[in-house]
Structures are given as structure tokens and as C-alpha cells.
Image (cartoon, rainbow, N blue to C red; front, side):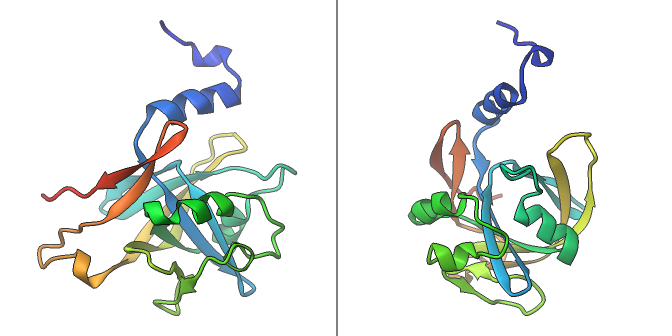
Length: 189
């Protein structure tokens, strides 16, 4: 079977892509604007380059057609913290995917604890094994509601007991596997 993407609507394209390009780590992106902590999960997230260290995340619109808060905050503040979720976070991860008004914080509304690691970036999700502190680099204008944002990793938090002197990291991320979630173990190089 060959499926011609030019004959599909956006929902069907998303469904096919999200169920095929798997597993994908779940990026729990934390932004902060006007002291309001925004927490949102994204599965359209991937490494792009290691020199410079870049990741890309595709962010669309809310149901009312305004840009999602994460996108608006990154474009305004130029900063984001990317946390990787564990299986124990799944319930709060799903809750944080609910759309809230811009002046409401998922951290407060869904009792998601955060910890400030560095004053220069938004906080991390408490209990995160690792987090990337990123700055806005650029975006890719694909003439769509979705805007791929490229973020440059400036530093990374890793829980002390999960990283050795060779920078091998042993973390348990959850990832998107089609409609569901799975667990990915780390690989040593």
C-alpha cells in the first residue's frame, strides 16, 4: 500500500507520522513569563545537530487558533527548559496536555512541583533525571499553523548518580509509541 500524503488532511498526516516515527521521547517543556510557569508535553521533538547542540520542537495553535503558550513564551523570552518524563510522571504529563488560559499555570493547577536549578532559565520538573536549558535559535517557516522552533542547548542538568565520568547517562525516559507510551532505557557508547 502506498499512501499519498497530498490526498490526506492534516489530522490523517499527523496520525500516520506520529504512529510511524516511533519511539519519540516526550519533551516536557517548561517556559516562564510574568512569573507564570507553563508546562506542556511535546512528542514532536528531536535532536537536530550536536555542533551546535540543537533540538527542534514543532508547536502549533490552541483550539481558539492562537499560538500555544509554550511557543509564545519561547518567542518572547527566548528561553525554555526541556525535561524528560518518567513513567511515574505519566498522569501529570497527560494532565499538563490540557489547554489552559495563558494566565494559568499547569504547575499550580495540576500540582506539578518544580525546582529552580539556575536563575537564568525556567525551573525543571521536580524529580527530573535530566533537563536541557535552551535558548531560542531560530524557526523554520513551513507556511503552516505548526512552527518548528530550533533551540540551542546551553547546559544540561543530570541527576548526579545517573551520569559517570565518561558522560554515560542512565535515565528512564518515556516515549510516544503510536497512541501509547513506552519506556526507553539508556544506551552506553
